[in-house]
Image 1 (tube, rainbow, N blue to C red):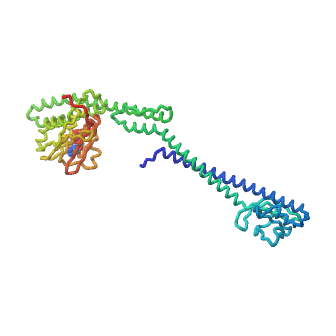
Image 2 (cartoon, helix red, strand yellow):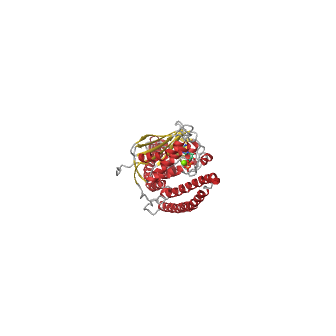
Image 3 (cartoon, protein in one colour):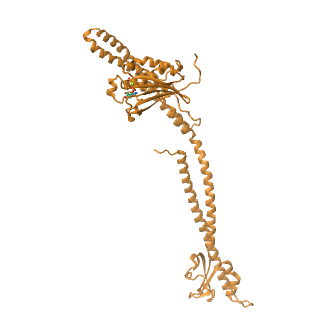
Length: 458
Ligand SMILES: Nc1ncnc2c1ncn2[C@@H]1O[C@H](COP(=O)(O)OP(=O)(O)OP(=O)(O)O)[C@@H](O)[C@H]1O
Ligand SMILES: [Mg+2]
């Protein structure tokens, strides 16, 4: 499953939340501001209409002989100021502007009550009108386009959007680093938890110094690791005790069977039983060894060991087994390669791999061993011309009691423990084991151990 970082998810929710808040604020600002300004414009128009009515009511012909409407033009300069003035009589007849001038309100019905309202002018522009009762039952209306105000509001909104975007970028940058700091201990705890395996269950996760939820979670996880460790120890002790207890009766049984085999008529059945007892004793020893490896015993027996020398000695000791099957064992590279470890255990690795190679390779096969340096590691390879291992079995090969063909392995005396011992010994030595195999062609088992820079003491 695709993993998205918590940091990114938190930031996404934060960004969504911020966009929501800024949008809401923007809407409130736009509606509030334009509503207020339009209302103000309406009020101004109303006052203007009332001033016009006042002028009409108080007008007396001046000595200069100007008409009322000339006086209005002079007083209010409607054209220059962008005012639209209409004066209609009680029958709806247009008095001002004079019949010769175009009606700026063309198509807009005459007011039927005093007050303000919004209209659409013949030009398509929106405008606010103030209407006041004129003399003789007529109506005076003054209007002004609201477009300039709406344009101003749009300009304010552009500034608002720019400021909000800058604020959002600053806030998100701050949030990104703040979330990163908060989540840093989580990444450290996850890395520490990844390093904990059944071999180092005694280790604990680092508890962050701040007494927060993450510290609490770490303590809970440490508690869980402690309980797992206890359960594993109980299990290991059980396997160790059971294997130990089985050893003595098996030794007694072996002695008795050997005695019985002295009778000529019992020799053959006893020989078969002795073989079974031997493989049972071998299994018990292997289980005991595995439980010791699992419990990570102290490294006091560790010395510097040349893996090539150990390989040569082991080959010599196992040569007879190979000769029985006319299998040829060769070495194609044995460079001096020193590792720090337990000699007996490392020898067990070579024995188990060589034992498998001899056991599963058909007669007249070829086994090739090599010890090489591979960067900082030392690689021990055991290659055979055996039957190979099916790809689907490879991931399970190092599991305890796993056998590719249980019936055939049992015939050959195998319990499926050898490779899990190899893997456990490699892990104890800080190394690993790999396998490559082609069906019908053969297999290569590769043990990789950390090399040591220190020279041998001889
Ligand atoms: N060199 C090899 N060639 C082909 N198959 C192999 C080889 N080595 C191991 N296997 C397969 O892997 C299985 C597991 O090997 P492992 O050594 O763990 O057990 P075993 O040999 O069956 O028994 P044990 O080693 O406990 O006596 C074997 O049963 C066998 O099927
Ligand atoms: Mg084996």
